[in-house]
Length: 156
Image 1 (cartoon, rainbow, N blue to C red):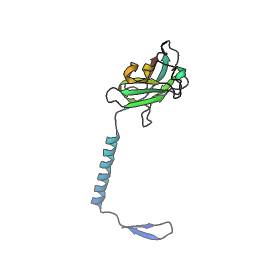
Image 2: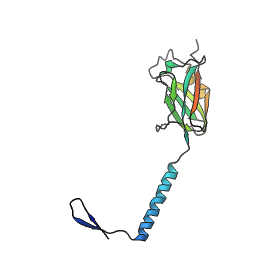
Image 3: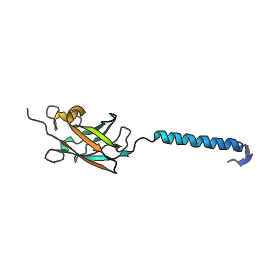
Image 4: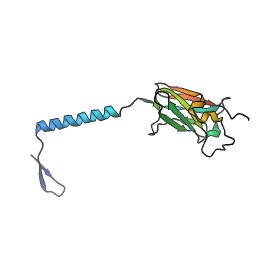
């Protein structure tokens, strides 16, 4: 039995669980922690950042507020990043985590919402994974720097 004095000065009596029960409770708590930690640990994530450029190497600044999106070749999971005013981007998972697991990814590039659909800043082939022809490989390293090269729209 343990005596405690509460905030108003009154003594209270609290019984402690017997030692074997406390030991089992500690073991059960530790086992639960290990299970939860083990279950939540997914594949290691590697940061991906880069720049969208045109074929001539100039930054695609017309795509500011657009999106670079990755689709895993292995499991079709997605991650994306907003294109900044200087043409750079950083990929984040749907949960807001910087980066993606190592592996191959198909890439699509979308102009910013509200862009002129009759005169898009890039060729429409980049709006779909199936037609973009863009692919990157994320490696197991501190930061993956990538350049995504796109074409201006063709003349019709």
